[in-house]
Image (cartoon, rainbow, N blue to C red):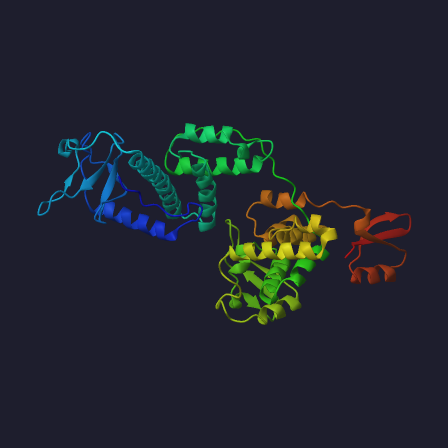
Length: 414
């Protein structure tokens, strides 16, 4: 029995696999499916290929009605193709096999089963692609699902998946609740897409509060990076955009006259927006060569992740005394830092939401919860004359209280 055709790495969202799935959809609709030799139904799906001894291959089918699996078979020379129905089978096959042959047979069957499971992932990915789901979301879900497959789960059998989630140590609720939460979320999407009935299991998980780095810590990363990647991190710092949003910034999105950057390819359903940045940031972007024209940076949104991991190892190695904090910083930390600065400047909630691109204020609330104001955050001054009040107002102070004839002004520390 030959092996199935599947993508080689189930953790990678294979665009070629989706293209093949698309062609398969077209072929299915253009030609009639063969009759199932078991129940006679015409309702069947293509189910991989079977490779023959001469190197050729035949199509395999899976009956939707009775789940019988069969394949096309080329008979003797100069004859038309037929299906290998039970009536066409010969009785000259051996009943027994040598130990070596049995081992090879088991390996082949294992490969076949794995191929079928991978084919299920391709079908899921293709269906999500047709629904307009982003490649990043599809890739992430396929990664979680492929780990279930690696543990022996059958994605089309919810009981099998629940067994893996309940018995494997890496899905322990107490030690790694986030991993189990994300896996259940991905499998829920899989079942909904392929119309498999499953009542999702409960996972007790509360996301941790975001780590907020100090301005000096973020600046350390920017200054430690190379020319292009340093400019990329500076753009993250000044715009608060996501990694993919910055990766897709074009030169036409940078307005040198107004010192603004437009985010015209927002992710996760966010809104397009224009952010005011420092003049130094604009100059830094202009100094980058045109390797990725019309984009400034590598438009592959996954590339910065690998680069940042190498940079983090370097920064922690060069600053061993601060490594415990520095190793908690990741690319998205720059976005949290941006929101944190806006909130501490007492910007209205609506403005913070607009600059982050959030459509819902509920998404912005997660950022506001990280801000803690205390006495050390403020510079306080007392005013008794109009002239003093005007002078303080010009340098960012605002009145917050009055005690007798003394007016109290304050501003946030830099």
